[in-house]
Length: 91
Image 1 (cartoon, rainbow, N blue to C red):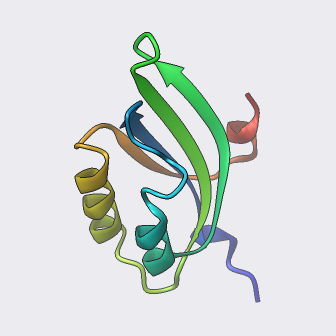
Image 2: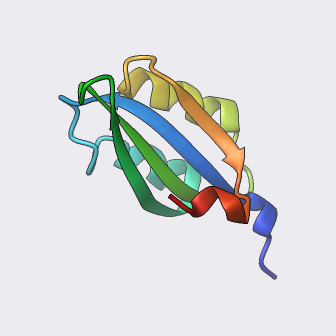
């Protein structure tokens, strides 16, 4: 059956110079079965993007490994992996 606890809200801060459309694609391919970009927000006068994804982790995903790989890509800016709660998805 469906395991809702594997759904996570993933927030990644990236520099504006990074093309977020495919920069994390191979990482997501390895660690998640579903990945949906639900929100993009600019911050720091537009020099940073804050991306919010809803991801579904593969059963044996090591979350720390995944976050470490994402940090390499986003220049060690903020990453937050959280339980999806229904109130989180509203803007």
